[in-house]
Image (cartoon, rainbow, N blue to C red; front, side, top):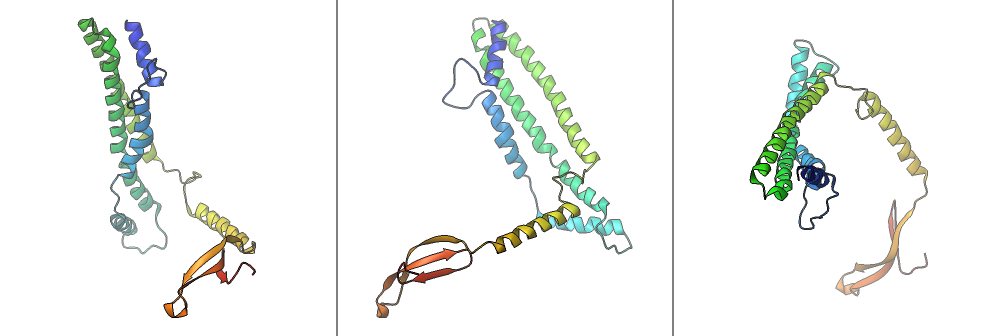
Length: 226
């Protein structure tokens, strides 16, 4: 029965259980939703005041320059602002771990249901497994905090996802090339058909016109013969 408990617990997480619940999400599906829906939502929900951020950037630049007036934005100001934003990731990350822990604890209780005929065995099984999960919870949070500390220790501005001056200049060049290419392309027709235009009552009410909508203009005619 203890071995069957382990099998059931694994199947509920991997999603290959013998009985599929069609009423609600359970097991691994709920954990998957935490990672892909709840966690991104918590990140988006973080408070972000653009005016406050601009003020902090301005103060950071001025404080680093001191009595001097600089022409360029100092790297220290950039790092100070970025690190302050990275630190805000700690709370949603730790909350994500807590949510997964809650789901695993609930899953343990559901899987021990088959041990109901042996209350003492069920109680000990729940205690041992839950204790182990909570121990992993502490180590998991330590790893999450370590990862954030690693991100804080070094900001890789050479990464391809980082929009620095060189990448921004390159993207501007590419965008300009694309725009020039679009200008060379002929004026394409987006849509054509009949268009009802309301005219004053004195002129006979509304009339139907044949219209042609292109990327640059909208034209209409009395009939389809243009």
